[in-house]
Length: 114
Image (cartoon, rainbow, N blue to C red; front, side):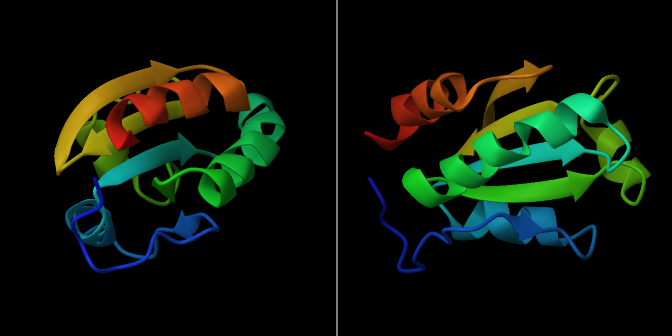
């Protein structure tokens, strides 16, 4: 499916600016945005799954710190974390809230990358 020339990164991209999310979503065919906070226990427990998904799937993974990017969290209606948004071809196609396993995340991503 990958029609864009940019290779998908094998490590999560840490958002550094509000506009970066739009850039990542427009650069890659499938993007998993992980809205998290450093103090969030479930977010910390999910980190190995997030890193594996970045390494083992055809989706780019972007980490969005809700404390730093409160405007983006509000824009996406994030009320609980971890909150994950899947974008395919620039469109928000899935939203997951709460802890998810690597298998659950991979299965959702596979629907849009195969």
